[in-house]
Image 1 (tube, rainbow, N blue to C red):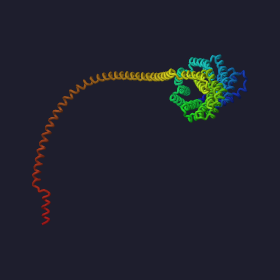
Image 2: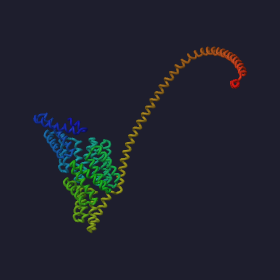
Image 3: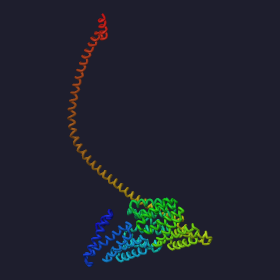
Image 4: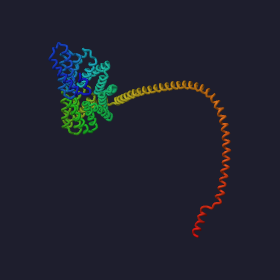
Length: 537
C-alpha cells in the first residue's frame, strides 16, 4: 500500500493514500459477494487502511475518532475471519480506552487479544499484550499479578529476540520495583533496559529510562542526579518531537522544582505539560498534572486553589481507578483540612489513603499516610495512636532510605558505568588489535619488498661486474693514451712558460724606457704656471 511506504517520512501523504484506499474499498465491496475470493482481499486492505488512519488520528489527539476507525477495522477483520490481525485492532481499541482512563474496557480488549494470540500461536504478539495487561494491573494496585504478567512478557520477548519489547518490559518491571520500595532491584532493571535501548539506538526508550532514573534519584533526595537525568531525557524527546515524553519531562522537572521550593518554575512547567495532555486527551496524565499544580499552589500558601486542583485530579483518578493517585489526593486534601483545623475530616481522609496504600503495598505512600496520621493524633492528644503511626512511619522511611539501599543504588550505578566502560575498552582493544595487525601486515610487505630489492641489487651487481671487466680493459688502453697526452702537455706548457718569460722581459724594458721619458717631461701643474706667467707678461 502506498501509505505504508510514505508513513515514516511523510505521514500526511500516507494518511491521504489510506483515506483514498478506504473510499475505493467501500465502493468496490458493493460490487462483490462475500463468498468471492476478491471480496476477502479487498476487505483485508480496507481493514488495514482503517486501522492506519485510526493510528494517525490517535497521534493527533482525536481519541474518539481513532476508536471509531479501530472498531470498524475490528468488525471487518472479524467478518472475514482474519484472525491473525484481529488482535491488532483489539489492542489499538484497548489503548484508546486506556488513554481515557477506562481501564476495565482496556483490560477486556487486551485480554481478548491475548486469547486470540495464544490460539494462533503468535508468541511475539503475546508478549505485547501481556505487557499492556501488566501495566493496567499495576495501575489498579494489583502488584502481584502485574509482576507475574511482566515476567511472562519479558520471558517471551527474550525467547523471540524482540529487543525493543524486552527493553520495555525491563523498564516497566523497574518502575514496579521502585513503586514498592525495592530500590536496588529497580535500578538493576532500569539500567538493564537502558543498556538494551542504547544497543538499539532507540532514543525514545533511552529518554524513558533516563526519566525513570531521575525520578528514582529524586525519591532518594539526590536532586542533582535527578535534574541531570531529567534534562538529558527532555533534550532527546524534543529532538524526536515526542509530545507525550516532553510533557512527562516537564512534569518531572516541575516536581523537582517543587522539592527545591522554586515554585514559579514548577507552575510554568506544569501548565505546559497540562496543555499537551489535554490536547492528547490523556486522562491519567491530566490528573497527574492537576495534582502537581495543587502541590505548587499549596507551597505558595494558596490553599483554596490548591484544594481545587487536588479535587479535580481526584475526580479523574477515581473514575479511572488509579489507586496510587487516589491515595496521593486523599493525603493532600487532608493536609489542607489540617491547615483549616478540621482534624476529624482530615483524619478520615488520611486513614482512607493509609488503607489504600497498604492494599497496593507502596511503602512511600504508607510512609506519607502514617506520618500524617501521627501528626493528627498528636494534635488531638491521642498519644497511643500517635506513637503507633510514628513507628510505622519510621519503619517505612528507613526501608526506603536506609544505608544499604543507598549503597545498593551507588553500587549498581558504578557497576553499570564499569560495564559500559568495559564494553568501550573492548571495542578500543579490538580496534587496537586491528591497527597492530595492519602494522604487522605492513611490516611483512616491507620485508618482502626489501628482499625483492636485494635480489634485484645482487642481479644488478652481477651485471655491473661483467661491465666492469670490460671497462677495465678499456681503462688500460685509455690510461696509456692519457700518459702520452700528459707528456705532450708538459712539453707544451714548458715551451709556453719560456715564451711568457721572454714576453715579460720585453715588457719590463718598455716600461723602464717610458718611466725615463716621463721623468724628463714637466708636470701639467708646472706647464700651467709657466703659461700663466707668459700671459701676465
